Amino acid sequence: MIMPSISGLRADLAFIAHWVTPHSQVLDLGCGDGAMLQYLQHEKQCNGYGVEIDDDKIPRCVEREVLVIQQNIEDGLAMFADDSFDTVLCLSALQMMKHVEPVLRDIARVGREAIVSFPNFAHWPHRLSLLMGRMPISESLPFQWYDTPNLRCATISDFEDPAREVGLEVIDSVALSDAGEPVTLLPHWRGSQAVFRLRKR
Image (cartoon, rainbow, N blue to C red; front, side, top):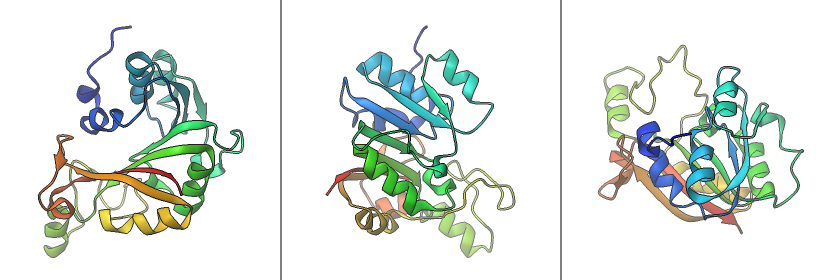
């Protein structure tokens, strides 16, 4: 199978992939169509599993030769032992959870490290939309308020405290632009997506 460019599949994945150690065991929560795991398997010789609930995305994972378990992440990860994975990915999925803390506790239990990303609700176009009296719609939040799968709205500054409460410490964090590039100037305002690399305390 010919591997497409990872950045061509989703802009943020190319940056996130460089934090994953070659030959590691990876769990991808909310893996979607399996693009990230396929890339890590082929380019970094990683092994692992994806967890995905969407019926439409499971066949695509199978086509990509990604081992996928169809399950709601919030049902727990009891099938995996403590420290089963070197890295747990939860990319643009945490904001869709009803109960974020139990998911973070499961991530901390089964993984030695984790990479978590979510839309930065404090991105300046979102702030402007709210000032204009409208809920924001953007590349990172592309849904109307009445049909969005996103249940939680968080900013870059919001995440570190709940991560610490479940036993995770931040190794690194970055704000990414819509093009997947790190934002260094005023990241809380100009970053459309927050990405955190974490490990057990």
